[in-house]
Length: 116
Image (cartoon, rainbow, N blue to C red):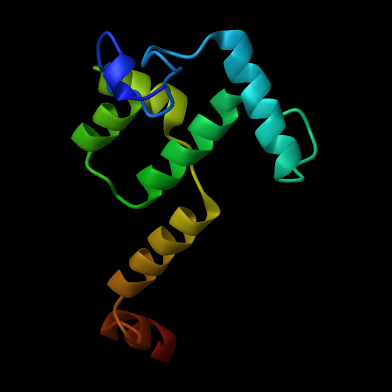
């Protein structure tokens, strides 16, 4: 079935054959099949995928307005509570940035203290 059979376009990425949201059981079955096809072991949930995806998007310094749009949330506090997680890559960039703010060489007062 194509879009011509849909009653209404809900703007979904993975709609059912009528253009409506997937049934949760069918969605879960599809997800497990996809994990098996990708040879992913473990019991991962779609929520974990969503958290990972939005954490990665956040690490790209995406504007909050875009993050809200992608997640479907209206409130930034919800976004930060559920999807904003620290990453090692972000920590490294922050530390490198802080290191870049330090002056090169020793300040004069340290040289003076050492000579006394």
